[in-house]
Length: 416
Image 1 (cartoon, rainbow, N blue to C red):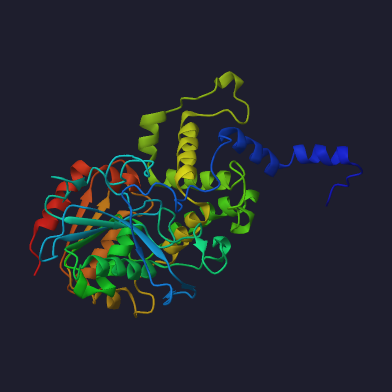
Image 2 (cartoon, helix red, strand yellow):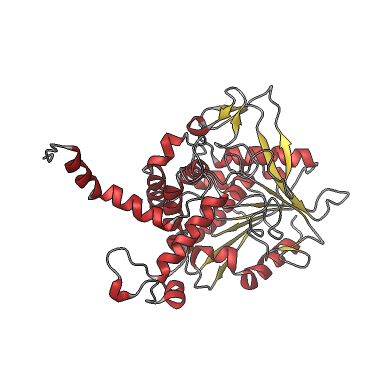
């Protein structure tokens, strides 16, 4: 039953006790006022190490679930040298909030060091003295490739809510354009973890003659109901932020964008990426505020950690891209339209390295074992390793000492 409101003063009192208003104010106190409306890279920003491929504007790039992009651009980075035979190229595919800057220091144009910097470089797991390494910012991303924050040439405004749904298969087809541009007919390997592993699997299925080996880390043949559920909650955090404005927020002033929604989405995800064991060891029961003065909104150390990660993402990512790529992962299913998982994997001709992180609760080892069983059932050569680690899903990013040698050994083998 609605409570009658007789005057503006009573309305103000009700507003003060509105849970949504209270939550908004709490979030605002935890977020700096200068947070950008979007952390997307824009033309005119320092390019850093980015290189760009511009797809033809007169021939649209059709997407799997409908929609066409005209004149899309793809940002990519490279390390090492392509040999004369062009057979030493390794494609490294990034995860949800990654980008093309997989290796290298934070520098002008790159706000952080490469997300896989401990794995890529001279003498590293993906040895740039031996391999020509390529990483492409996915279509729909926000660090140089065309995405929702990009300007739609037909309207002269950012795509925003008008940007179409993108699938993993669309991303792979766009990466094929980069391979063609670079003169790479066949990758020595396609490597990726999490969302990157989805891309690696699709490369092996879609273009078996263009992939010699595949490395699929902490990933799955299809998103599970629980993964979709976590994604849904994160997306709701963004769309319930009134400053999201239905996806058309790019005109807003700094501090007036959907920072709170994106930060909360990142905080939710961050919990799923790590483990109770890691949180207990790092934070325990420590608090930021004195426990005697705690109240409802006092903070434990772990809450400050989540705030930090939420703010970091807001400064380098875009809320609409997060929604888009989050849904891209939900839609991932190698079986779709192919008669089942085994029929899909029967197309694979490359040896596949599959690796699990023992404590991964988001992409649990069960999923990688099921993938391995399906590969085995259709006669695909494969290796399977479990990295014993407390780091949870983030282990594929962090456990370079354990995972690195496995990758090095696999890449060094001579596939037939």
